Amino acid sequence: MSIFIRIWFFFGLIILLGLWFMSYTFNQQVKPNVRQVVEDTLAENANIIAMLVAEDVYENHVSTPQFDQKIQQALNRKLNATIWQHNKKEINQQIYITDAKGIVIYDSQGIATGQDYSQWNDIYLTLKGKYGVRSTRSYDLKGNDLGSNYSTMFIAAPIYYQVNQQQQLIGVVSIGKPNRSVQPYIQRSENQLFRQAAWIALLSLFLASLVAYWLKHSIDRVRKYAQALAPVNQAPHFRSAQELNLVSQAIETMREKLEDRAYVEHYVNTLTHELKSPLTAIQASAELLKEDLPLADQQQFATHIYQQSQRLKTLIDRMLLLTRLEKSKHQLELQNFDLSQLVQHVLQQYASQIQNKKIQCLLDIENECLIQADRFWLQQTFANLLDNALDFTPHSGKILLQLHQHHHQGIEFKIFNEGEWIPEYALKQVFDTYFSLPRPISQQRSSGIGLSIVKQVIEQHHGQIKIENMNENQIGLIQPHRQGVGVTIHLT
Image (tube, rainbow, N blue to C red; front, side, top):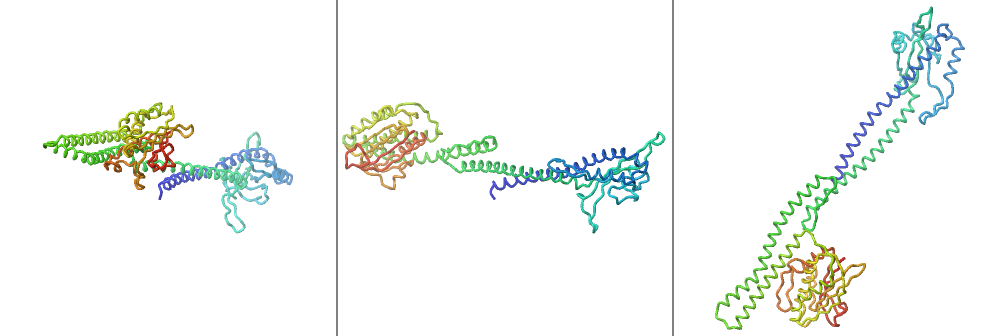
């Protein structure tokens, strides 16, 4: 099961259980609270009616038709009251009156007159001088209990009358109200509670989904970061998630240690392999120089030692550059400068090599190509490209350099050298570290570091680079019937 589903499920379960418990607890308080209010109102009404009917009870007027007519008119009075969105149209109460012995002397329903109610709680307690209340269940014709919603609450109040300047208890009045008359208010409260609980549950589940997705997404970022071993990746940072940041930092530290160890091993292995060939050549030449050789042979072997020493120096310099580039963490020193002047400066550095091979350099360089970049690394880039072009250009060949600044597309730099095309299998590998092709004349291979440095520098500047074989229709300033290799760089 996905961690997203698990987090969402447990978040949702906790929220729903909490809402259910709160709703259940609140719902259990609705009915008692409503009935408490009803009981409070009935208690007040019972005492008011007890005062109003005291004289009628003392003079035995409650058994007359006139008294019953007056009570019935009051109970049957039509109402038009909208109470909390419920339209109340009639009075839902009943009244019965007993004498001082608990015998019913009046019943508004006309069914209990003459019965002994002295043992009913409302009458019994009131006659004892206490607060009298009872709730009576209702039954259908078959004797089945209709439930608490169909029960009737009775509240009694004593009837006092002043006889010979003394207050005497002459009877009890009890007012009953069916619980079903307040059921609409209870039902409305329950419905509102259910709707609100449903909305809260949906909102809580939605928020739980967001939290679960955020946690899953954050964990996935840490996981992907841990799986990606390329040094260009940057440790993810999370807002309001210190624990995840600590995990990322721990992985970053562990990763740097592992990368450093692997990098040193790879660096040493590569350097050892690359140094072995020129050192062997130097050693062989040095041993031959110990013998008595003609001057011409001595000069030849000395020249060979010098060339291999230069090869070692170039290899070490480029290995140091590659190490510096890979360990720099993309910390470029950006500055504004003219790229066209930088290209001219690089050409001056290689003027002697260009002259020795009698190579014709064709320039199509736009003046004042301003750019914000790292001057040192771009100089190394152009130097490596020109050095590579010189190696693969035949004697008396041509090299074309183009530099143009486009307002919407940035700066475009192209370098083309005449020569043999790159084999198809090698086009996708020329920028790989330590991959190289044999030089056309000497058939020797380079360190395979130069173009790798070029690609990394361009990518750090958020640019693009591509290399392709070109014919006479794509070259431009070069005369027809020529072919070679072109490198195109786009910088913004």
